[in-house]
Image (cartoon, rainbow, N blue to C red; front, side, top):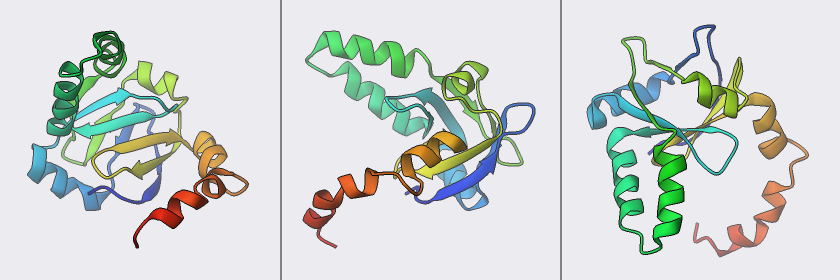
Length: 146
């Protein structure tokens, strides 16, 4: 399970160092093979390869073929397969970096089965102080059994 938010930097070559605590679990679960793509938010989504493949199978099995094709065009069409290097870094594709406005400071958020990588300023707008996101989820939090 990937959880937590981590302030990171993208180096001049467009590489991101995956936090150390996730490197071995990723190596064990998928041989450090990752897929980087886009989704509905203005961020990059990073998946272990088997999880990405599961989602692609789910898209292919959808009854609504029009929606399935649109999802494939975006989710699969922007996807880039990669692997962590020996230092735990991944190269972020330039096209996806531009789409997510990533060029230096970033926040990597664990989302259980994937990571979302946000430009630090966009993350601050959406999740930082002054954001109304938490208040908008007040009722949802009340329904959780915790």
